[in-house]
Amino acid sequence: MLPTTLFLDLLPLMLGAALAPLWLVIVLLILQSRRGLGKAIAFVLGITLVRLFQGWLFGMVLGQAEVFSESNAPQLVMALLLMALGLMLLISACKSLIHAPDPDAPPPKLFQQIDQAKPLKLLGMGLMLTTIAPKLWVFTLAALGIIREANLDRAAALQAYLVYILGAQSLLILPLLFYAAVPGPASGFLRMANEWLTKNQRIIGLVVSLLFGTVFFWKGWSSLWAMGA
Image (tube, rainbow, N blue to C red):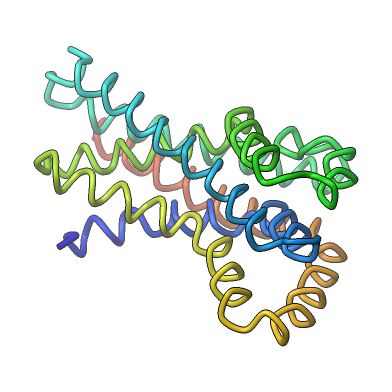
């Protein structure tokens, strides 16, 4: 079972990753297309595969890095990672204020291709969009750093990372389950939710980036300050 303290440490990262409105908008759009459930599952599967690959890649690098043999190195790296993630989110919030393009946003023509796209193509889109989103890489690296600091055995560390992935993708998975359970009522509700999200996407992204950017930067800065004290 995942230690409570570790879960609480991972929770802000899971929430910060899950509350990105753009990804939910894409999933809701896919669900409204022809044979949308299968295509939406393929898209989310693409995101999941990249996150699993990131976990394997970063886990291997962190596990072999000699720098982590030093006593204060893990705490220092985690503090710097959280500060970097906080800065990225605060910069994203500033860009939202001036209506600057989001570097993590997919190309506009993607939305025009959703209705005609087949599941395999949407799987590829999920793979591609997650791979080229820099904030998602930093979220994953920060989560793995927290898991590594907990000094778990391999099986427990894998379980913790899978919990992180599930939490980070919870808002993408819930509409799939809802649509699969009651496709008729879900269709109308998800259409209204998508219209609301699309209309308020910028302000939601601004609030989420500002809130979690401040939290992560302050947490990283506090850890760095405590190490120097």
